[in-house]
Image 1: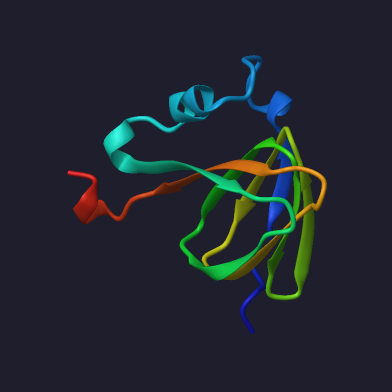
Image 2: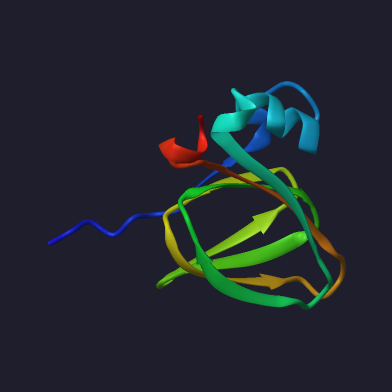
Length: 112
């Protein structure tokens, strides 16, 4: 039986002494051509679902809950979650917009 892939969550402060920003996240993912880094803003109460490749999400602002299969992961600004590939759902808190930076490694054929 295959082990279920789990989401791991850490605080940004464990990774870097710099303030958390799009630029500081990009600085961790070098060379740039090897990674896709993108910023997304979700309105309060948004409910987003889809499929994604394995990677990391950095929460710049707000609160949200991410669901991967049966795993429910509450996230707040300053959290960094490493997630498996597959389907996901994100529920944004009602009080404020949620700003996230997604980063994932590109397949070798794109990294040239």
